[in-house]
Image (cartoon, rainbow, N blue to C red; front, side, top):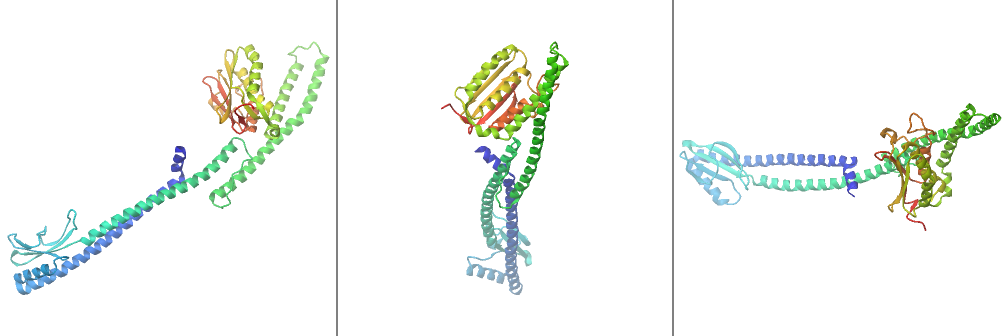
Length: 452
């Protein structure tokens, strides 16, 4: 579950929508800020105009009738409109003032910020004899506008983030599902199942078009691989007859010279021909297995019993080579498969281990089940295989003995890989530190927990 969530959050679709949501949220915030500043400026201009008009009227009365008339006018305004009104203050030259208390005593415009209250906009107008008239207005509408816009912008941003995150998760999940669909098919193809194709939804979107393009490419690759396999199979098949005849001729020649030593050129030629025929036989066998023809004859095979007998048969061979063959085989494990081919897998692996691990080594043949899959293994503590060769060793004609000082065609592990693929198994080569470990994992679809 955690891995799925991590993949979802790391998906390109989720990242794209997350960035889009962030940019959209920033755009909403910037637009709201611009709108607020515009409206605030308009409200301040209205208050400024109101103060200007009131100040002009009071100054007109002052110029006509003096200071007493100014005081009378202000007193009337404060008494007749005690609620929503402007604020007034008249200061004398010695700093004494009447009417409202205002935190300013200078000429000109001032904006006074107040804690937990609306700001004050004040205009000071000088009078005769050092007097100063102050007219002010509270910017309450501006304060209310700021609070309202802040709450609504925060709500809008929260909704944007929630909807954007939800949309990102949905889009990321859909994107990840499409990628997983492509990945699963690509993994199967990488394992050699060239007949696999990416399923199409028929929606015509980019993923559907990509699937169609990849499927066309796979059709071409499968056709080319099939042609190569067919040519190699035909060559191997067609050469078997003339090589067989040539061997008979050499045997007749050897029979005509009964005193010929084992290292006589005729005997050496026969041995070379036998090796060539074994290679061609292995190629034909791999081609037969890859065709899937043997799958129709699958039966329930007691692999535990087969491996136990195989280890008993090869114990003496390993002992002659100065090695020890050890078995760790759980009883009663069965497979649905071809018994002869399953035995061939472990025969090839045991022979390879005996041939390449050297005297004094221990070869361990294992077979266990964890309920989900059946796991077979052949391990040795010999010289092992280099990391570079580990991924190539199951390919045809690739040999761990690069100098080819030992016998073999390099097809034994290719045959193992083909049989494992036929049974839907996964084949792994890894270092046993020291030595080589070959692991074969049969899925639960073909592996059973015990014999009936």
